[in-house]
Length: 280
Ligand SMILES: [Zn+2]
Image 1: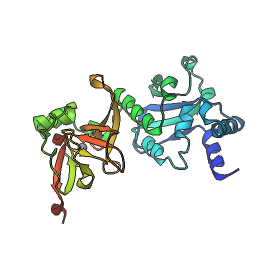
Image 2: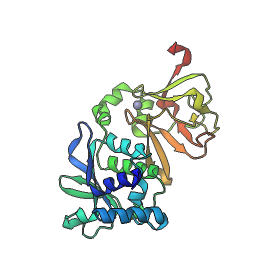
Image 3: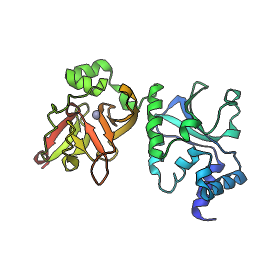
Image 4: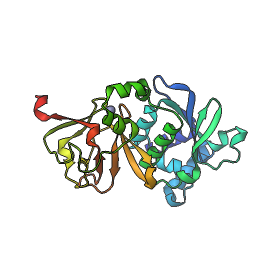
């Protein structure tokens, strides 16, 4: 048995919980795999995935498989959540209320009540781990689970701290009118910070002239922005927020230049610029 199979078997044999510091104990995320527990089932399940990935039924396994090998991004994401996560199998779930549920599925368990936040139908449509994280993140927020930083500052405090246009863009998800923002046609060397909390978000080396009417970057600084699904105005877009304060920044699209192919389309009002020579 090679190293990867061994680790994966361990992963499947035990129900495991990922805990972090200071998590909220009234709620937890419950990930239920479409597989039965036990070492034989685990091996069959594993072989099935390797031999015939296209017919593999549990897309939750397929997406998150490799967590110990290369997908630290999944583990980091789970650890960053303000609630605990439990990973288990359908045959371990004894709750009668879940008898008619099709697995895999993801639930939010709040005071012993199971709320299905991602169904098997949705899970099986995701093509990548990133898709799963984006949707999961939005559903968690919709259910009132906020990251620690997001609830420290109240709405009233934001109103006092920000100008009215900053408040509108950052806290009410507004949008600058195109071609009007102070950083749209602005290409000096330096650092762009969040206008809400001063966190470093983008550097001028990754800024380019997209012609779209808003400042565009092909990359954010690592781990500084968060993506969520945004289905407002009848469009399917990916919203970008500041990971530190939750402030709305803009959206990310797949029509950017190399090397990432991404276009982070950001409101000037969400940014503060710091010229490079200030850092000397
Ligand atoms: Zn911020």
